[in-house]
Image 1 (tube, rainbow, N blue to C red):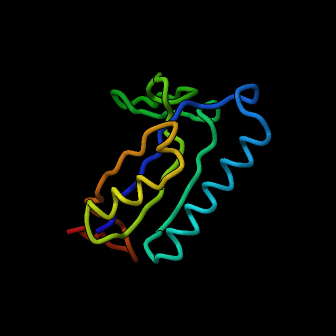
Image 2: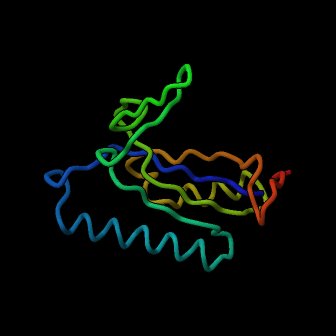
Length: 125
């Protein structure tokens, strides 16, 4: 079963993190991604740029609306995703617990419903 481990945490600023903290965080995420990969469960991993680079798009009554920034103004921001393929929710929980972001933010676990693969939609169940 595929699960998305959605990483949410407060967006740090240059003044809130030291170079040492940044290096330690990068090393922790590298070790985590490597462990997922070596276990054969990692399908993809993406770290997103900060919300300052976000653009939100919607279409209302046929008109395109473009907004700088994220859709929601919240304390925590969606910062990245690890897509894993594990036997069940318990396994996904175990991997989420090991995610470095769980120590200062939230890791949301969401099962995949369908995926687009080789030109067709495939049910996750």
